[in-house]
Picture 1: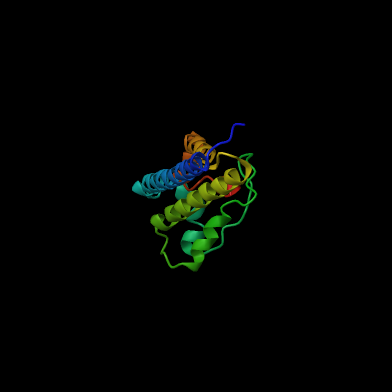
Picture 2: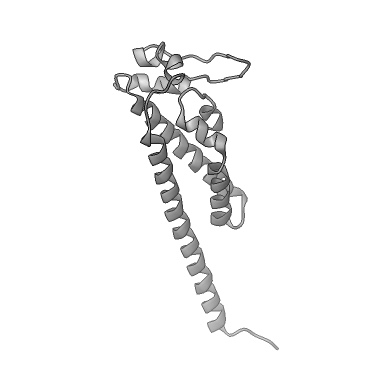
Length: 157
């Protein structure tokens, strides 16, 4: 009769828990580094660009509500309505406030993706990190966060 001594079972259990602890901590460190780098990239050149302010200068910059509308054949279900949140914060039309909202939306989208992938996979941290890296490697994902004229940010959420 082959029986495993309880020492081996205990050691295997300890090693498994240690591996999960290491994976979890490593994942959170990498995630914080990614979010910090992303926030820095977005805020680095946060300024009005030609085309960005065209849509906002007539609405939230002067204190009016931005509404959803369709233009140039693109469907914008929420339009630029996410910028209406800035009407509740005195910002005097500062471009940094708009890009700070982009950072908040990026962090929110990342955490929602993490929560979703964490629920549906066995190897939670590795798959979640891979999914986040795939999202971050998309050119379109960066384009919608680096400029204010793209309303697709709200579609990700």
